[in-house]
Length: 164
Image (cartoon, rainbow, N blue to C red; front, side, top):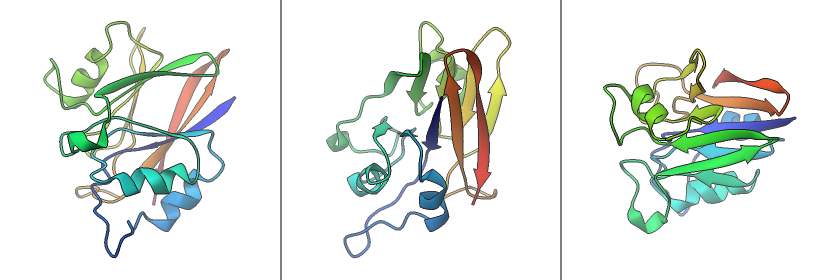
């Protein structure tokens, strides 16, 4: 069984050479097996800080520079469970969850996305678990959040939102 930290839409720039991720986020991610960042990172320093906690997998969001060298989507596997990671701003679909779901030709068990800054956990009947962890730094009228994903090959994956 693995616990995976999910983060999106940090939109941070360094001040004085450092980025100020919320301390509650960093504490909440302590002990995870990996961290998935669903884009709109804005600067490499965010990935460096998160990488000090656990291995980080990240995708490019609509505000991210090509200089970060990030893909627009990733397909990962944890404990036999496929997890798709995308920002959710590209592709066909009327809504961010629609675009995120359609980013993968063959639906993985879980699709993690961001872009809207709106936290969401939704299990699609006969489809993937959709997870938007919200934003820990720019929540757009909501509480700042991140999410934790629990995966184990022989049980359905589950996620929970963590308010900061």
